[in-house]
Figure 1 (tube, rainbow, N blue to C red):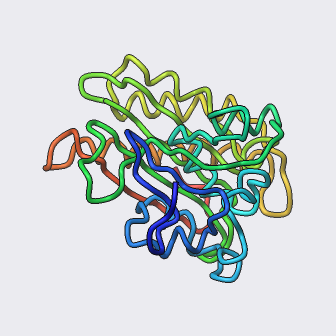
Figure 2: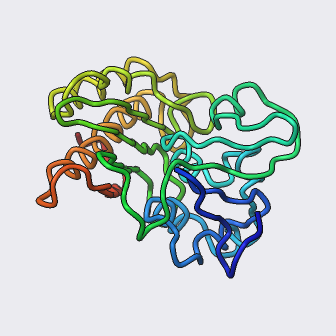
Length: 248
């Protein structure tokens, strides 16, 4: 599929296709760049880094843009590999699939189109400063919530052996209403699930605690979206950035 203008992607039936040779800066510069992408690609990533880093580079080396990689994990994105078709990004990373990467498929309409009904996202991170890479971050995408959650994904960074990964704890939401109580249950389950490795930015205990806090904040953003005056069915977006601290 050919590109038009500065846009690195194209709207296809039910998802957004982004060519893997597009740069992160081209994605940010696009007039219809999703807000979640813009927030996870700016601040700690400089223009220079974004301009030299391609989508393919991030897919093969997630640490180059770890917050954005968490976003596409939470969205349930798939990568089209030559000769193998579409592969979920988390499976691609885990199985280390080889082959030329052609395009990234994201189940997200172009901004300005009809929003995904009943879908909300939230993003939270903790870092030394706004311009530093997150020590721990979380991106949550929740489908449904009223009366019950149909599907939920929660991606974490800085809390496992890989740069980013999906938390199994998000499954606790499915079939239940999205409430402060169910969110707290998930945050507690996240702390029990993660196995972070400590370093000079944060000890194992700190990263584990922050994984729970960031998960809770990201999910609370989703809840706030579902409770907005515009009613459920709106794609609600939010971001929470904290500098240091252990607060809950």
